[in-house]
Length: 474
Ligand code: ARG
Image 1 (cartoon, helix red, strand yellow):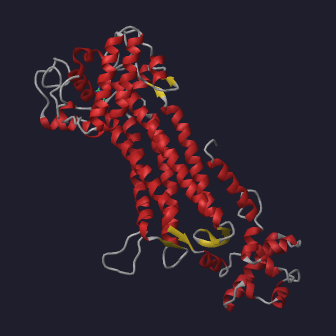
Image 2 (tube, protein in one colour; image 1 turned 180 degrees about the vertical axis):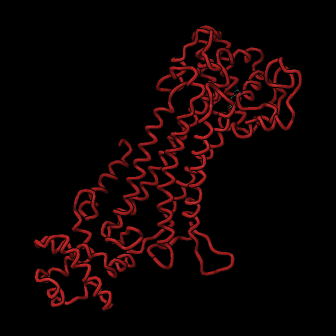
Image 3 (cartoon, rainbow, N blue to C red; image 1 turned 90 degrees about the horizontal axis):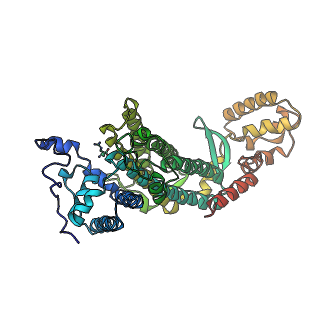
């Protein structure tokens, strides 16, 4: 069937892609400026899939014969294969992926190919492609979120009773279960996963058949093409259908929140790996050295994730600004959605994959160092106040008293555990020998058994919840 694919075929009918209305070809620099083929080739697979459904719909309503439809579908599948084999490489004079496909189809199947664009415009076509593309990518990102969560849970399972200092204002606050700390990221990414599922509802609508802006004179069946493409519904207003990019902005917003979460964890890993903290060691497969300082092992993965977060936020901002002044309906400004969305997808997917590998094999927590860290501070001070409050001393009074104890201990170079019982009792008669147990770090953590707290019992409940949410049918 057809001819050899040309590297950059002259568009059918002459030097330019559009109607005979034009007398001269585009200025070469403007052609370059105008063209999206350099990046929208990413949509090729979706464009072919969308066109196949459009052809089948045209056949169903009698606009194409079954034979014409079969030839078009076969031609489109040939282009898919040619692309996979590296034989379909449209050049700049094709303008965009849609023209490139149409021209190659006409080369392959002849005049029958010219009927494919009946009752369709590139405006509803590109909108369809973007939604098909994003639908597939969102599914993949959701899978990557699950793999990341699994890696978190695998570490958490081993570290329910490993302690880690908890901070507020970046000051030691109260000790925590390490699993509890990691499961906070599980919860954030669970919301990310759910949020993407919600975005999907608005991505999965069909603009196909909205035409250039006003619908079409042909008796098309938009519900049929939508159904063939697995869309949940159609756009109910043709102007909205061709010019809506809310779904892309929502996706960029959801992607930005994923990056916020990855970036916060990255920041923690970076300082945990520093000499000042030494809470983790980084493995050789995920860190790099310095070209000049031989002792160094750099946390490149979390640094890059933290750094890449900015570009994803930038894409969200770019899309919002692109849309804010657009009159209805399609405007060429909308071509700018492509690179923003493609780069957002690639960045978020890449960061999730890298962070998952980092958790799986690139980071080792140091329980001895972590347990020791929580034994050397005043992060059990709240527990002394709670101890007194439980014995009937009003909390605010207890709080003030413990403030004084911390002050005198600091001055004496002592920790709370180093005070003698006589010293405790001189501070308040309610102190008894069980104060030592009450302020031991493991007890301090274990006692925070309120729902969602860091007490080991609660952490086991949270871990069960996480494990069940990770089951394939959850
Ligand atoms: N390349 C264009 C885009 O990405 C396709 C739609 C062009 N439509 C038009 N009326 N010029 O938006």
